[in-house]
Figure 1: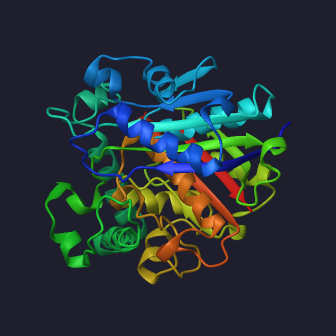
Figure 2 (figure 1 turned 90 degrees about the vertical axis):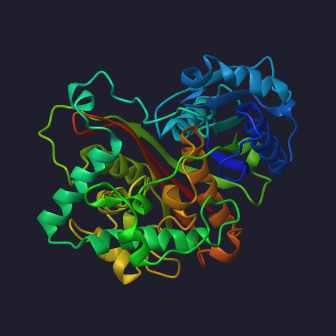
Figure 3 (figure 1 turned 180 degrees about the vertical axis):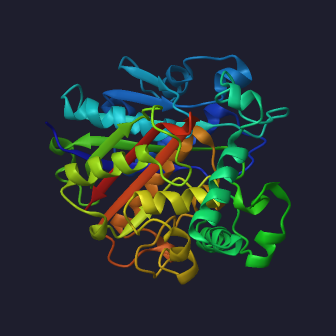
Length: 381
């Protein structure tokens, strides 16, 4: 199979972009990624467009063909991807496999989302399930996990809140992040309660934004000294058959183990991690499932500074979903872009010194207490 590299990245600021539509955001990120790769649209052999809410909000479908055609990507396979929060990373997974299979040598992956629209309300994922109809929406689901975690491991609410403090401190160093003003532990704990024990500053915000990456085979990338190799790309879903364990995600653990095996590394070899932190408890549970620490130790990593910039294993130095923002279709791409920039040594004020191996993990959707989608990427220089 062909080796796969990321050779170009582009991203808009994540924010409430009232004057920009979905296509406009996507064009900005895609053209920046092409410029970064030093390629023209004619070089693209396949395109992938990730978006979650477009059909729901506007009624428009197959937006990928429209957006990519507007920048000159035509007469090639275009795939539109929706996989909840992991839509962007699922699109990346498809592109990696297309290149590995020899379908094309260069692919453009673009994730874009427009969420700051009137009347959006709560996302309707899982609306066919009885539990969701009875109130088990996303904040409630993660709150149950948080409550169980606090009980089972005798962790304090302040330990969870420290994740939000850490990630906001990281976001202050990221010019593309939505929220860059540092917050104190007291501010996080005293912010309005959303679903006990999760407060508002422990929840990711809605945002508009786009992120794009150009992927290429080794034949194209071999002369690019900034190219970052994709060592593993994993997509898995839940079994939905096991008894619900609110503090252990089997899908997460299984996906990361597959990625480590394919990349020929272990969690101890990682230098930097971006993971799905839609709520503070999510980062805690993901760090444990990724093998960065043992069960019940994830919150302590944040409290002790192990997952902060300069710590043993920096996590979400971009600011994460909590502070960088979470435009659904763009998030998975943005996570890998952060890893690419870190491995290039282009992280600026938030650069992880000596970063050579990075991991990006994203999870999307919830069904029967399990994940509908989980992606794990390992990349290296």
